[in-house]
Amino acid sequence: MSSVLLENITKSFKDYQAVKELNLEVKKGEFFTFLGPSGCGKTTTLRMIAGFYYPTTGRVLFGDRDMTRVVPEKRNTGMVFQNYALFPHMTVFENVAFGLKVRRLGSAEIKKKVEQSLKKVRLEAFIGRQVSQLSGGQQQRVALARSLVIEPEILLLDEPLSNLDARLRDEMRTEILRLQRDYGITTIYVTHDQVEALSMSDRIAVFNFGECQQVGTPKEIYNEPANDFVAAFIGETNLIPVIWDGKGGETLQFSWEENKNKKVVAETLFSSYERDHHLSVSIRPEAVEVFDEEPLNLQNVYEGNVELAQFTGASVNLFISLGEKTVQALILNNQTRREPQPGDKVWVRFPESHVRVIPRVMNQPARSMST
Image 1 (cartoon, rainbow, N blue to C red):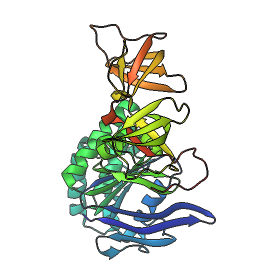
Image 2: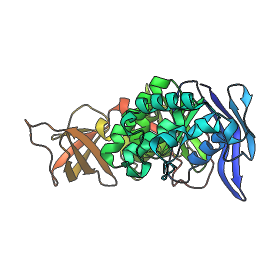
Image 3: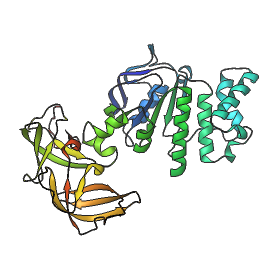
Image 4: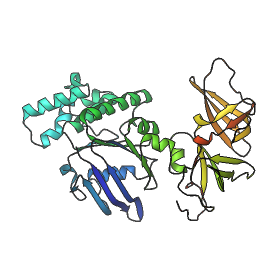
């Protein structure tokens, strides 16, 4: 088990910078996730940790050991690929034993370690079966067993669940997390799936365009996004471009950019406010309050009309037009009252404590923004 430190890592492919000046630390025994859309640099970063790519500049350290130019087979990492990379002509035993044979262990020790590893992933009954005869979930477990049997310092997983159906993904998320906790192994997990990242990780690094946008715990990333890209990528949110009007006592005052007559009040959640900042208000759908009648003596209240109501069982998703903007609200299914229906007039409120004012990095004019 080892920590991983990335110092000022940049990776270029000719004129294209896939990763830009990245600094990250993964702690010993941590389940750390690289999250972001396709082409954001997360897999390239994982491959530099594995040794399949070398950084153009910067260093990769495992603990205090510089591994920047060390070949993959000497890094003692276990890798689980998106397509599993199993040998279809081999049995389950032969696939899991492959890395141990490369290390020239004795046959008795190999047999013992393979059996122990397959028991961990609950596949001991399939030890003699051909890999080609297994289901996708079973093949994924074999890939995990093969990576863990060599007792790596670091486990690397590159979108390992993307080829599975939704129900099997749920089961395998639990299985991977159980194994990681059992082994106590430092784990770095790459995914574009926000649910996977939020439900499995100790900490998350959110990537976009080769840059790390934010690092934090799942709650920090979700509740306190660093900018509008993070807010929009992690779950659902309502984003409203705003202009700072100044302070009002203990709160901050903003106008909607699209309608300066509409105001919003927020608590201080961003370090500094300047008039040339590009800012957005972010509020999660579950935080939006919906009323049948206009509430009195409250701030951040707007009149609107329900455009769409989606019943999902436990909750109802409402899409409410506020004129310049359509916002999403999530309300619990309450069987004792009538839920708002399309065409209904309603009032929505953004509670001040749930309003996040964040820098705008998406679709903003081409001018500098200090943060």
